[in-house]
Length: 383
Figure (cartoon, rainbow, N blue to C red):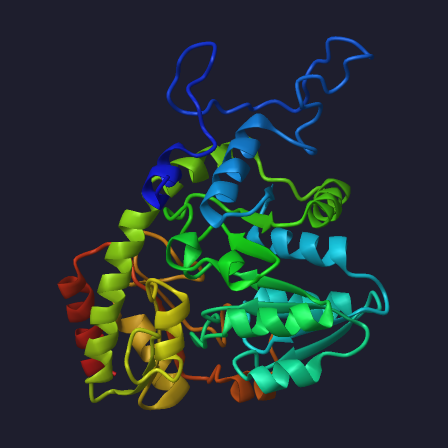
């Protein structure tokens, strides 16, 4: 079954009672049991442990990513936290890519370390650096590719090989490219994380996350962390995400094509110092991107000539682009990572990782690309 067919039909069936083509929203806290002896006979007891609408979304993501099981969460960060809580213990060591979502950095730096887990942030695009960072007590390597917000690309197959040799788990955040463009399990990754808030749902309507696994033992531990910490996704969010995913491939194709056009425009603009987009031939991991992904995605990063002040003026001058922290929606968004998504990362670490003060992040939506470029050009000429 092809991807586009799975994104519409996987995990869902007509309601057996009414024939409704859409999965019902089982907006119920609890599920009545037939008897003590048949407790959980229908698979559900309390929605913190599991819900039929949420399960339909999980089964769809299992099919799309090619995993064996999945758990859905109240946010992308909740998904990441559940993986850390479920699989790491005091005394463990975790290697995390030096460029990741700011919330991931914040939790690892301020909470994992508090609980006795050693954390090292390493340039995951440098395979030798990843290999050198592995220690006897290393339990996990956490990557995100393309990275938020610099669009740095990690060789997932190479990192997975290193992890396999060392007996270390490889966890990868696939939010930016989604399973439509990138298939981490096929590149050796053990666990895949998504913020469903972003491209999967795609309409700025929900906050959610999902973890997809290959191994039943990992599923058991992560699912227990979800129950224990109360990180479960709501049925309404699951239902909205189920509808959004049905158009994922169409949206990703269009948004990625527009992102390439926007990146090429910015690359030639006198007011722009540089552009980060894996689809550009000049991007340092362009060939790797072509090898491990089938598309380049809808995210573009660039530096305006004049640094942070010029960047702020640009973001205050645009009209069609919305100044907002989210990404992956049908609306085009513009973000200043230093003051918004990555404010928690110390400046010296940000600068070393390429998250400069003047970096601008674009999430390209479904508007006419000519209108998006005209708005950017007008704003750039006014700063």
